[in-house]
Image (cartoon, rainbow, N blue to C red; front, side, top):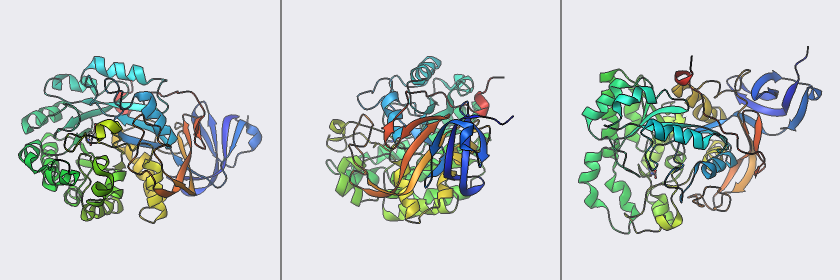
Length: 444
Ligand code: DOR
């Protein structure tokens, strides 16, 4: 009996663990059923992908979607709409909402809000605090949980665990890889007087390289001491890259498109507070250092750190202006432009956005194009040249630091578990988002 498919993606150039080549992909029941040369009459629907590249669905492992509590900036629906418009098929969302995502009630509420209201699949981090430490081993294994996230330097919101003793207690009790915002709170406090009112160029002076490196060094020491795995989010310095190269056994790390694309002081002069982010965008030598981390394989994943604030909030005078910029929708086009410019290969992009997240977080059935896996795809036109604009950005915040930037390489399709969610810039399917499954959260 020849199997029939729901859908065949016909004649696209598939990029996966096998390399790159023209293949048809048969989809059945939301899963990849067969890869090869497939007769068109075997499916109810055939989608012509000739001339397009089909990548494993891009998983953005760091976004802030602000629901509940801060929905003037974003919510789970608008944030995930922005994600799929940009080719992203799954997101891991952060716990600095209001209330903070630090209890079982707050966590399950978020999963409930996300299910079939989000346009992409999703997982949420549980915030680690001094108060919830005993509950973390249970909470980190909840359905839809990406793991524990800890801010060891304060950023947007009140989540903060700055001292080694409390960090040690968290690491001792948890089992999964935990993710960290690594800036040393003590140093940030000491250096606050360096902020210059009205001048966001002073942001990287206040939150300097040493603050980032000190925090990352402390984390690695605690990971060794406790025998646990850590993930250092949004690396911003060349020194952290050099340091982490020698600690890959316990530490994984993330780079963001903005730290790879923007540069100080230019970004602050052009964009003002719109370039203000924690940890900050720094001088060219650091951007080059992070690219070296990509080249050398030290960076494991790309995350956008999509952190929307309204234009009114961003219009406050520095340092009253909040840190954060949108990014989930621009991750794919900005990085494909870097691919076209020869800064990384398409294979490395795939490694950073699908295979990398799957390996680090033990994701079940996502992260590669393989029979039996979820039919999540990011379909891109590598040759298409487009200008990124604020108008294109579906985030409620409604702006991007890349407004006016011409890029080559564009997301033209987003498939989530076999459903074509976005095609040629249109949202074409109602929201069907489900929690991402992890090996550690699968129920027996
Ligand atoms: O700039 C930032 N904004 N960095 C963070 O770590 C948090 C984020 C936010 O939530 O606004």
